[in-house]
Length: 579
Image (cartoon, rainbow, N blue to C red; front, side, top):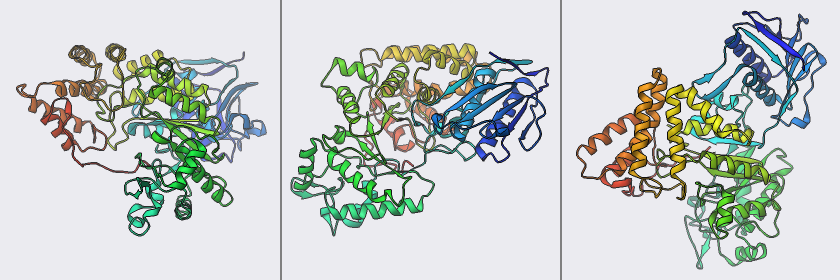
């Protein structure tokens, strides 16, 4: 294998070169390589286009350089290849985004570069950078990779960790994104109830012989199809930057049971039948005018089982949701142990849908929505589930955390980092990734203690269900767990090496403080003052919700008025669209 001395003693004989007409993403990739090589070696490696004459060995970025590098269709849009080319090194991709990813991978392999979260990066410094290079080819395990945590939408974090999240701040230079419109439940937007129900109740679900509000659409009504198509076409025209448009059921179980809809269900053997037939009609109707557009729909709750006959068109994404599952054990393990349980239903549905959709995606969950700060550290289970998704041919995965505008959840930055690694390569070593993260974010000694806390939480789930709507009296929680967790965090704060590390520890310590306060007896002296101090720190760290779609004042009342934060919120809810 050839050996290349990239830099030594602050000098370099190499040059970074791209094609003179390279696009913005490739030019940015080349500039990133120059920037981080400087940080690593102290050498400014000259960067120019191939309009300039060759002046020595080159690191050639992207296709067309000197007429010798080529894009490779087999790599797709996001795959890359790093290889030796005589005295030169080439970094190419199937597309420009792949070139950028290839540059960051080069830096990871040879300069110790890692981006752990917004504001925390590492790069190894060395006086001499000498590398041995054999061909390195990588493609992502999934075409769509989304760590759906607000703090993970940072464009630098996403680009450097090879995420293409729809909500990420990914500029063209940073590779762009797979932009969606109306990311989730959309029937109520396609045919608005407030506009049509009074005059056309037949457009909406019939339940027990009566058309009802707050339901789904009557998917066999031809006027519903006509209105939905008109709305969809308006969306497409007004949002040319979007590639995927959601045509998906509302977030309730009130499907239409009129005679026509039930006949389709009977033919298909599943409530998903009317949905897929409806979405297929829309997909066919828009295909000629908008050949690059993809429609998205859910197999969710009542529509989870696959149909018997209908097959989703190739321009339709069907996304299954694991909302009813437990997360303390891998889905396959739970399914094998309880063949009639929710996990078995989900696993069987994934397998069945493979015959009925070529673009299968998963919407998975990585947070407790009832209490975002409550520990939800199923990190090894998460990895096993992602490996299962790969094995059965899932093409896109979203892992949902706290998407509120202030972000913030138990170890959300660690989970975002780990998710990014697993969605690119599900065989990522989970323990090694956790170790790198903890040491880099919290410092060596404090990081080891936070690592102990993470392991403590994972052990606590053993034998107990971990679900996404648990209170602080969940079966796996105990006063002993809270005591031990608090001890680890207090020790970590005493050994933090600088203010940034201490602040990161204090932010995660909010989880333990939440558990302590929520489990505390209402009669405990000074309890309300402690809750006030807790919420001051919640605000200090910029969190805007610690319960899904619930304001901080309402959540504070819930904690103050009830043990385990169980006081009802009434009808209060914060609604903002997930796009």
